[in-house]
Image (cartoon, rainbow, N blue to C red):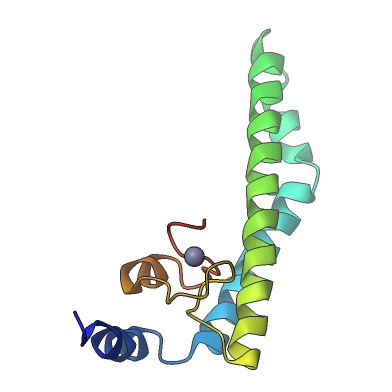
Amino acid sequence: MQHHRARYALRYRHFVTDPLTQLRAKRAEVTAELDQLAAPAADTVGISFGKRIGDGTSIAVERITQVAAHDGLQVTLAEIERAEAKVLDGTYGVCDTCGKPIAAARLEARFWSTHCVDCA
Ligand SMILES: [Zn+2]
């Protein structure tokens, strides 16, 4: 389809009107979540003790889940920062690996995407 690119560009402009503002807001959100996860969950542990023997296991499991979430957030944060740089250098919405436009649906769902579905 020859008109594909033009139609894509229109859709893309339609839903990401100000990517830099959205990216900065998202970065603040992820940074806040990271801070929360990094902070020792003293209250949670205090409440859980005194309940029942065996809760230590669920605390450990919770901790592992938090570490995984933390790693995931750091990856997302790095991608957001890269996407911000791409807005500034004019390559936002273009895949970092193959140079093709990132699908509109993908950008709509994850506006901090820096790679197309094929290269992700
Ligand atoms: Zn690609």
